[in-house]
Image 1 (cartoon, one colour):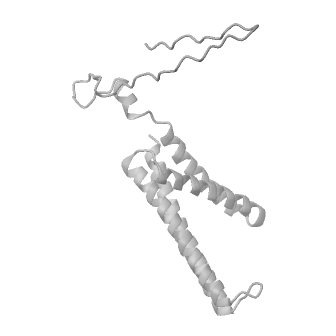
Image 2 (tube, helix red, strand yellow):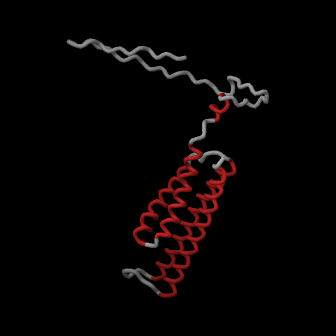
Image 3 (cartoon, rainbow, N blue to C red):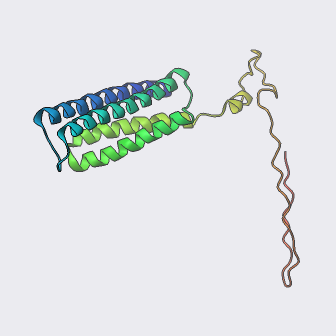
Length: 185
């Protein structure tokens, strides 16, 4: 399967990207501090500290996304809940940064961001297409007994939802509408 290598690659790429972004913003903070740079009258120390804090926060964000991708690779299961939201937000960040990079910088930066974006989408989409565990157990897989026969205990059956019959009111000039009762196999 292609899923596990993609998850490992995404984890490595996001961790490297987090380290590079944190180091680059830390470097920019040092440059702003040593050059006493100011933008629109902002205190140079404030610019330096905010650049360093922003770099650390953004680096930790990508490191956390890398941790989620690493857990996906180790468990070989789709990300769920907060992890899935985190990976989706990382994909959105890469798409937006890619659009800005295409407009403002070198096309190589755009290509790098789009490759990372594509890897994130591939990770999310390949794990999204897997069948549910109950469906795998009833499709011919054994239910843990080792004899190759699936039992009804492997996939609990849920009752079909009950749909109430609609109210039928006689209206002048119209026949009442009735819906047939749902049938279950």
